[in-house]
Each structure stands twice: as C-alpha cells, then as structure tokens.
Length: 318
Image (tube, rainbow, N blue to C red; front, side, top):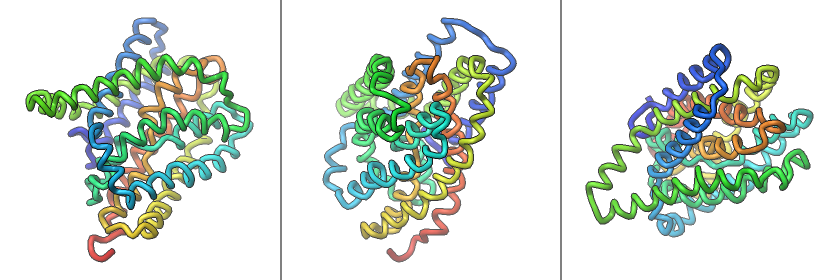
C-alpha cells in the first residue's frame, strides 16, 4: 500500500472516522482538548516538513524542466479549475472558501510517497517542495481572497498570522535546524528519519482531535459537506490527464511524467488546516471540515493513482 513515513496513508481514514464519531456522539468542550489539538498540529507540521529536503532548494532551481511545469500547474492551471469549481458553491461562502484554500495549496507530503510507489521519479520533484511550501503560505490566502470574489476578505486573514508563525513557520524553522544539525551529526539525521516515519499516525490523530473539537459546533451544517464530494473527485480525475500533458509538453521522462501526474494532483490540506482553524469560527467554522473532507478523498484518490498511473505511463519509451 502507499506509504508515507513508514505507514500507509490509508491510516489517515480511521483518524477521520474516529474524530467524526467522537464529535457526533461524545462532544467535549474543553480548553485542554483545544490546546492538545494545536500542539498536535504543530507536531504534524514539523514531521511533514522534516521529510522535505529543506537544504536542497538549489537542486530545484537547477532543474527548470521539472520546476516550470510544476509551478505552471499549481499557479495557473489549478487556480482556474478551483475558481470554476468554487462558482458552483457561490451561495455557500464557507464551502467556497474551504474549497479554494485546499485546492489552491500545492501538496507537500502525501503525494510524494504515492509517486514513489507508482515508479515516479520523486527526486526530480522533491527539491521543489520547499519552494511550494513557502509559496503556499503567501500566495494561497491571497489567491483565495481574489478568487472568492468577495466572500473572503483581507480583513479575515489577520487572525491566521499568529497561527502561521507559531504552528507552521516555527516548526518549519525547527525542522530546518534539525536538518542542518543532521549534516554535522549522523545521530541527529538518523533520529529525524525515525521521527518522520511517525508522520502518518500523527496526522491521523491530529485530524481526529480537530474533528472532535469542531464537529459539535457544526452539526446543523454537516449535510452541506456532501456537495463537495463530487467536486473533489472531479478534481482528481481532471488533474491526471492535465499532469500527463504537462509532462509531455515539458519532454519529461516516463518516470518524471508519473511523478508530475501524482504530485500535481496532491493538495496541501495538511498545511492549510491550521490556517483554516485560525479563521473566525463564527463566520468560517465549517472551513476546516471542508479541508478534512478533501484530505479523505485525496487519500482514496492517491491509492487509485498508485495503481493506474503505471498503466497510463508505462516504464518504456518517453
């Protein structure tokens, strides 16, 4: 099965199910539980970012043949698709904004392991991930403001700044420090690798905590989430041929095309989840649940991608 950090990404699904059950049948309002949730989010981000080659950005810049189509896919093609999909939800601002936030965010973790399992050249895209991570923190919220055509405003973003700093930038800088120390001390490098193997269980537990906290306050709106399911599945279906076309136009190798298809379809819901949670809960309380719905569908989609991409792009030829 597709693995990330040593565990199948399918283990994220039980976390979603557990969190939903706890939120529905054992709701608890506790500041301690909320604090544990934020601590788990910070740990999740640290583990996910630790798995990226933060010190290898130069390698990405030295491979424009891969970098350019991947950035065009994420900064031009995907925003167009996300905008079109968001228009379907124009009467439901929370669904619209949640969809934009999660679809606009390039994937930084789960799709890499799937690409490797499918025989994709992960090394060709791996070094671009730190650039995409930094880009999504700046570009995605602004894109969401513009493409939501007034639903999300710049005034809604300031509450996210502290969370971005404390839960995303802080753990990311710590991950960078650990990688730097790992180059000097082999024991640190081995410890980092061992920790990143726990990323999937931590993601699963973190999502369960988020759902446990957030579902009780959104019970009257949960049925609206069903409207997102066909859109998120349609996104995965569309991105497969578009990613393949990008690989063909860029004259990539077969292994690089496989990686482009899978990584291009992967989204950054894991990184966007803290930002979604930081938005005003009275106005945007459903947005984190939108992100989690997309993440669950993406896990299913990536498991399918792992099987079909090698059939679509055989290992022989170009």
